[in-house]
Length: 216
Length: 336
Image (cartoon, rainbow over all chains, first blue to last red; front, side, top):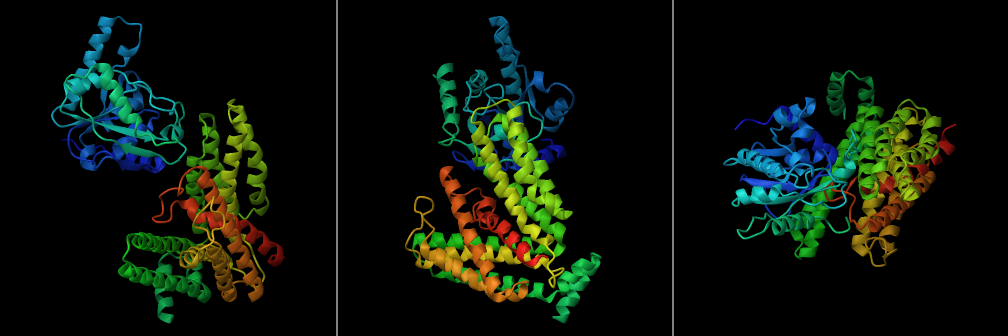
């Protein structure tokens, strides 16, 4: 297992400082086992904050899943590929213009890429909404998480709710305002053998939404 | 005492700062530091004795919280006194950092919108450092008006320019209030270092120490009196822990302590008592207002930065109203 990139540690420490994140392991303990963490997505800080909240031994084996179109070039590519060893996936399958067959094929490729990265023992961090939202509630999930769970029914899916990061570094802003944030890990879920796509997506969505504190 | 001075000199000498040596030689400051150390030792001994004697679960929780607070007091006193020994720069950095941390807790609880992002960036990274920089260069005239006059106009203009008018007045007012409390009011504490009082030259750090000591002591004493004999709540709707017994006991005992410390200040005993009374009363007012804000936001504490104490705002609430008033009274009556 390769060591963590030194820059990754620096960025993680900065992200923790800026976001003042309070981490709550509400539904499970931080463990060195294969897991798929799925979180709501509102800010560029999301992944780094989530990753930095994991124990060091878990971090070395946990990869983010990043959209190839966004993280492909320049400094972004360096950060994603070299520093955080991200798994790239194509987002194009989600646009509605292309044909159904092409879309299915591309979706399959996405799942294969993620499965390969998961391998025997590694973990993934995914954002099933597929894009950054405004921060008011959790947007609808794309089906990737379902296919991934179907392919790896033995892996725990851990919901992780990130709160307030959209106010610290909203979409389109370059500099963060150092407010306080919170990260809650919920109870892991697994797919049932008979569960339909819609039922599973609804259950996963509800698991993440339930971690939202009241009045938020 | 000679030996202590010799050690202090050798430590300070290695840093090649005559200011540091002078501060270590100042017997009054050493007495004050020694007194604070003694208080902390007594508190720790009493805390550990209490934790041995308690039986019931609720008493256990109270004593554990008390001991966490005492441990935090050690750390806070050490940081505060160390920065004071470093000199004005140390105190300015410490208070600027406290402002930023308090503002962060406050804005976290305040519903701002996407359009306020840039305004908040300016508030955190430009206005706050500039305010403390003005103390550093002793530009009193601008220090006193920067936030209430200039920033007061700039914040709503900046937000209006972003074009989002949803809850406009609410957002502006809340940001204004936060910057007034967390930055403007708090910066008056290290601003005491700017004051030059005849016969008290070079001793202005003792003014800052006096303010912080009386404000925090009155806070601790209100808590202690309240726990011991508190019965009648002042405003149960705001804070169930604030009682008349705690308030009167805390204010009177803090005033007595302030009067007893008059030799360390430029004041005579009666003015020292009067100023301590003002600090203690405004400390209570600050605590009450902060409690009302927390109650409104449905939280118990502003954060979890300092163990047992809640957040930074929970700790500075007793200073933020007291500091500007104390500063202006001292400036009006004692600075020619």
